[in-house]
Amino acid sequence: MTNDFKVVHTIAEVREAVKAWKREGLTVGLVPTMGFLHEGHQSLIEKAVAQNDRVVVSDFVNPTQFGPTEDLAAYPRDLDRDSALVQDAGANILFNPSPEEMYYPDRTTAITMSTITEELCGKSRPVHFGGVCTVVAKLFNIVTPDRAYFGQKDAQQLLVIRRMVRDLNFDIQIVGCPIIREADGLAKSSRNTYLNKDERTAAPVLHRALEAGRALAESGEKSAEAIKAKVREVLATEPLADPEYVEVVDLNTVHPVATLDQPVLVAIAVRIGKTRLIDNFFYPELH
Ligand code: PAF
Image (cartoon, rainbow, N blue to C red):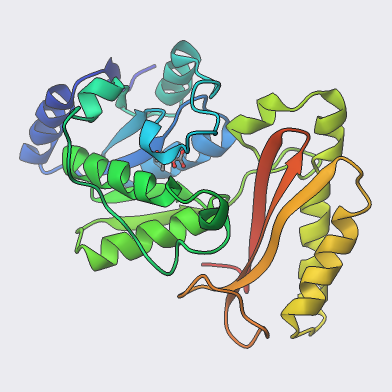
């Protein structure tokens, strides 16, 4: 590889490298991740490399965004594989801090959000988006990027981060990137590794259900209830699929709408066995 690349573990090292780049007038992209990288992350990194002179990828399983009964301890990790992928994709720094490096034990400051975190994933994961915003704000302050890259698979997260950036006046462009899928339509996710063989066979039902909903919207259907009923009907064909929510929400409030009179997000969370998977589409497509 020809790009300068290193793995760093401290905030001081990242700051030193970024200051040197900025002295040279170079632009900086940030791709925040929790590691165990796949082609979805790779596409974010490649976009960041194409649009910036230097790129930092963070690789940190952030404890504050997991609830007490969630999969923090089990969350998959593989730093060696991640660092090879990040270097191949052309980034310059993989920032892999410890929880102690990122969080003071006596910290008293955190970001909270209202309204747009109340529905969808925020409903069953009450601490999640506060933890995401807090760690992303910290990463923004550490890396001071010109642009930061987030996948549309975590659509509510993307809307939440855009809102935080607007509300708190971060001078950072948020770039949303399309969902990358397996050949059978399953959205790429680090959590797909939890699926056993039968569950993996069942999981593409999420995409099939959303495609049926999208086709109905494209045919002119305006009723959110009708779109949700179609999505649920397809999910019900798969016995291993247990829907947590099927929702059509407004992009500003992220609260349910009755009709598709404005741009909407159609989002689902479905348990396949013990694994909770999410998927979505924006209607019309986000550009
Ligand atoms: O999307 C993720 O992987 C995480 O929520 C993020 C944005 C890296 C914050 O920990």
